[in-house]
Image: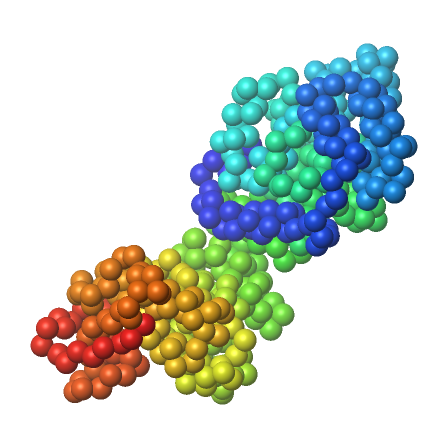
Length: 479
């Protein structure tokens, strides 16, 4: 299994996207709990405990027959059919003398391997290794112990909707069952380093896709194997990129960046740069490619985001609605130049007031980790005082929410400047007497403008540095 020395962060971000979309319910209402739902839950538990599938199916079928009106009826009935089918397949394998030891791929329905430790790699490498060591006789463990030559044996299983015995998952959807096709595709993608079903990044597990999508995915794997079955792991990834979607290419390029061959890494870099510019430079998508580039010291995406913001805000502070992911990206990877630009754009939005766009930059910056650690964030923190002029809309909430954000900004300013503004780490309750903060009048003269404060904090040529407050005028800000 690859990935022992990869930079995991970019792949963790892609995995996080996979997790979030897989966890999105297919319905918005609370699921009804009745006799059939209890039967469903009991069937899942029994399946994980290793009970006979035929017995499980018979018990669930008796409940389903008594409650045709249940929301769970059709779903549970389909599970009964699936359990009966897999029970028959197990019986056929036993009669034919086909065991898990000599044909483990045909026994994946009996695997208890959690899907996420295979699908979310390399983030779960340790968990996967530990499972294989604890359960070497699990069919999935035996499949994983083999090389890429196992892939053709897994291809037919991409249309197998039989349930596995895996019950421990990070997805909390109570209707979800890990199917053989889910496990088969996860192993194929781990062995190949490729992504074959782009829709999984937006619409959840492979088994949630339509039969047409599962069939087309199988054909894609078969076509890839015909071209890549005899080449190296890295070359196989390059071949697979041709048919991959955006998020699949990001994941594959991240793996390819670990190649020892310069030409593989160069190919990955160019692919990621092309993705940054895709769709006219869609920033929300571009930063996913940018994270991989940044992990390898390439600031191409950062420069592209900076340029896009400069162009947009040079025209109007109200015509461009920056996605928060791009703001977080610049905040994390940017230095003085990037933070200065973010502060200027946030200032422009505040000056525009209610017309400042649907997504204000300032609250996004206030939610970034860097406002507590980077002195480049000081000008933006000073801008938080201006939010009072616009109102709670800037922070998408009530006056209390606004008050909380301003307080947090001042706590961070104290930490970063090393000066005391009289702000305690714990914000006083709103019911207490109004708490007045002494904030250094950092601007020259007696100006009380937080904007001037922010400019003063950004005055250093080399570093943003703290300036002692003791000799300057002070003013009170009423939270």
